[in-house]
Length: 315
Image (cartoon, rainbow, N blue to C red; front, side, top):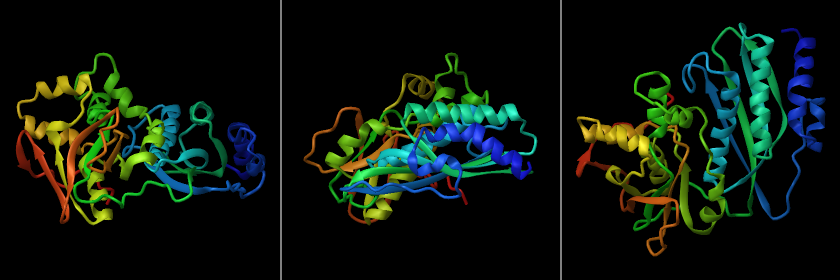
């Protein structure tokens, strides 16, 4: 793609996604200005997605854009932050035609409007490698109130929001490996729902939190490591959707099945800890507790089990 083509494409596809943000300068500059907000801290997160790793090969470009934004918003949700802007970098495959690039921009535009975000800048390039996109998301949180992974203390309750296991089963369903007659599981994998609705409760009572992207056990382990504590995770207490519960009932080895659900990742729920005297908030399930020591002890089907790495490792 020539320089002229690139700038024309940015003007036509991505300038409207600034949604009038003054600091974006209509994407005519090579930098942006992020405004300050008195009494708030700026929270910054960044995630990338690669074809064949984070989404299926030949996935619809609009779905790729929407998932890219949502996985970043999930990180902000776990920090109890209010999103407001983002920066985008896309490496288009050389085989991508104009219509495919337009579909990506349309998908991103739809979710930027839904979540009330502004695109502030970024870059586009062409690659001979797989379709790759990276997004940096910005959010606000009241000064000193970001919920970190550090902060859990022995005796705290370990909880998770929503349902767990739909992401892992959704990938299998999207690949045609398991039945999914109504498409529920594949939808959960392709279009996660960032738990931005939990900002208030997390600010009020969470001592530590992380989003469930790599796998519940692995992400709970991130809390344990950052907090310098141990954790007990009881997979028998996993909150399951109807589809995941039906799948579990059909498995010959419930222990292995529970480990698969608890380590599969792509759920984009929030795992967190709260003080033992706090009542369980609505929409959360208690799945364990914080202990002295270090590491994560996992139980399934009433037994202590080896959950391996606990989830996805990038390297």
